[in-house]
Length: 330
Image (tube, rainbow, N blue to C red):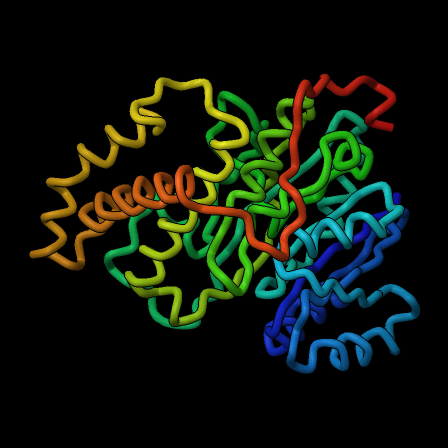
């Protein structure tokens, strides 16, 4: 069994060191062949020299690629396109894998009916936790924990596959197509939803995925992300991303003025709670109410005003996905 780990990065060599050390330090079980590809997404720091130095002592396990077009989705697509492994793993440059990460992958994918897996993100705090952080918005800082039990992704489980801790069969990625280059963060903004879009396409193709509590990564949370300003910006740009995605593939829900009614309803119901936050700035429920308003504002901007970045590839168009047959899982 072969595993290629794709690691996109941009100007974060100080964090990349820890990510690479964790990937090279973790034990690899017999029967699993691991290769690591760092996709340098137009860095201006010492990323190339850092990776080259690591590669010199890794006996071919580590490869460097350069992707000049800016965007996480484009970097992931470039790394995936160059892979020939059975499995594609993905982590981000501000993460470290747990010691049992490779063993967990080998154990789960011994079952041919498993198409993809994801797992928890354990925060590595760069500053003390803040009292106003809403539980429903932990994902803003990459804090994911769906409990101690394995869960099957789908209608009965609200979890979603996050691309910073994911392993997917390569044949499945070829079947559903690349990440949407108009989604995902760049230097120009906190665009997101590339993982959400990919996850929905995986499910639409009939793929079977599992949340696995043993597939652990440790995610660094820097001080600048533990601010209300960052949360507001992140939620706005997530709304923008969802608005852009909605133009391409509208949801099967009721709309009002071109916006899903549930978004409008949630924002309207949240207004009284958001006003509470003016007087009680440490109340997480009040801040969650405010963030739902930012979600709506971003969606409307993305739906009606946002245009694709000039350095992005054309939008991914996915139509008439057919469920995977047995051959696609081989």
